Image (cartoon, rainbow, N blue to C red; front, side, top):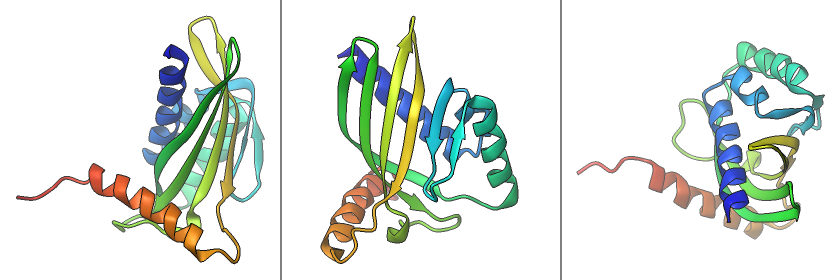
Length: 154
């Protein structure tokens, strides 16, 4: 389905912009009235506000890099799609995930003409309180992706 791949690509570009610490590229993917809800619960609306917020974060401290796996892409209407994913973060200088930073991503995108933009992106902590086996499952699944992305030495 074309919408499926277009929205997966949109999500991939969002994470890539974060991983490159590019606030402008990240914000360009957000609709003018789009909202992001961060891991800490902070809310930013519109590309300008998102860019200013992220530029401050990127300037003040090194950020971890995302590893993510899409769980679901579901049309909500002819020009609206929901994407859900699990994610984890690899701290700067590390080569493994920090399970305490595992999260669930929810993205809603709208199409305007041929362009998809994010109207909502929510990054929810995946603490799984009292269920360490779920933390382990989440982390293990993402570690497999991380290992696939790392170059193999002969």
